[in-house]
Amino acid sequence: MSENKKPVWQEWIESLIIIALLAIVIRSFIVAPFKIPSSSMIPTLEIGDYLFVLRYPYGFRIPLTDIQLMSKEVARGDVAVFVYPEDKSKDYIKRIVGIPGDTIVYRDNKLSVNGKMMPLRSKGTRTYFMQGGNSDVSGLFEEDFEGIKHDVLRQNFSIRDGEWKVPEGMYFSMGDNRNNSRDSRFWGFVPQSYMVGRAAIVWWSWDSSTSSVRWDRIGHVIE
Image (cartoon, rainbow, N blue to C red; front, side):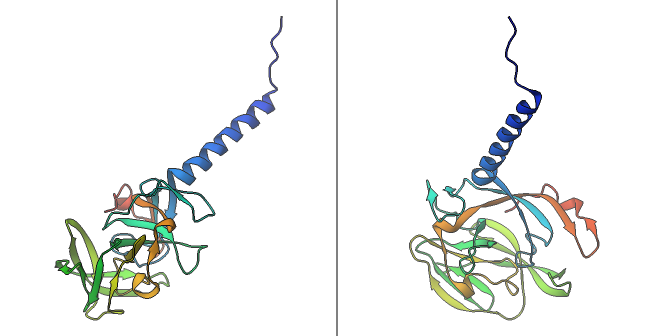
């Protein structure tokens, strides 16, 4: 008695459909790629860095909607990807410096959270290329953000000073390149439902200014 075998072409199609569905599920709910297009997060992230972004730490956001299931509060200090509030067709990546209930003060290029100044340690200067190809030089500092130590760039002047009280269900974001970042200082707060995921690791990095791979960046864990 002969078995009813499927045609080879049918087996191939079924396999491709399963692979495509798995890829959609993984990209939508587990991990997704993200490319750094601007200099706003230098020195933490360079233009041309390719990242893996973990989607599940903040809950599960249903694609093409503002619905987030099993929402979890973003940790202060996380480097997060979120839907840009002024243009929902774009994703932004910034550091979350304010969570619900926080009071954020930024004056004279110094960050204060709930009345506590975030210490800065000078590390000299840093020359970098912006997205237009022009170069800039900024002071390089290590910022101790409540135990999360990371480098920031800043000049001797502020581009936007102010004080903000973070509402419930909202977050305050800033770029690590403090004088070259359009962030919550300009357009306001990020809703919880806009949170896409947490930046995890650099898996590829291309330096367009030298047309070369930044081998030392590959495998860099983002903090």
